[in-house]
Image (cartoon, rainbow, N blue to C red; front, side, top):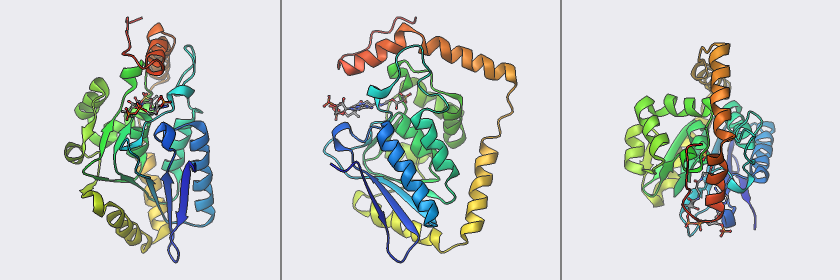
Length: 262
Ligand code: LCV
């Protein structure tokens, strides 16, 4: 089964990446992410000036189940380190020299929620929902990921998403700014294509430089070396904890986790 379908719309500069790894609900495995990054490199060579990131519908109505839990490292190693597959993908999206539009039908989980937050524009249909779930597994998320949420939806709403891990459904997702637009399910593909066609009519150089300025400005968090080291130390306590391993084991054994706070 193809994990991805890629297409370039003829006579346009639009590239489409459609996730299609049905068996594990488009979980962001290293293999899937490596393919996406390879396609983005190819799109860069082909001077694509707008990318659409979508997913083929599946019976679970899941756009992506997030980081492949089966690939999370064992206790004692940072699960979201700088070179982790998910972080590498997020940077590739941010640094792609043209807008990436996330087109969402179905539910988005965990690191996939961070992924769509990192895209430049998000269009969801009425079935779309968004959940960030590290607390369900016992993961100490990471500073750059948390900053994506604060930048996009503000402090209070970002805290609610992280601390409850509850899915935010389309109407509230629009109100909070997780998605730019909400459309009827049957209108999603055409709406996103029209937006992409509009973007590709404009100056690609101007858009590229404006996108990079957005990235520089939104990443401009003054932080002291001591604060950085404190964050790393706090996160290490979590990913070295028994709770971290318990969260992963509980998911794999299909049972609720029994967190002990240690
Ligand atoms: C591997 C999976 C996954 C999966 N990985 O279908 O944000 S952080 O910090 O937590 C970050 C590290 C992260 O992204 O972690 C992952 C966060 N993702 C989640 O918490 C979602 C976990 N998945 C689910 O809650 C359910 O699978 C949903 C609600 C997405 C769909 O439920 P449904 O009952 O429709 P199943 O649970 O039966 O899943 C179908 C198959 O996909 C696998 C799952 O193990 C199952 O495989 P088997 O049939 O072999 O058992 N699967 C689902 N999610 N993230 N594999």
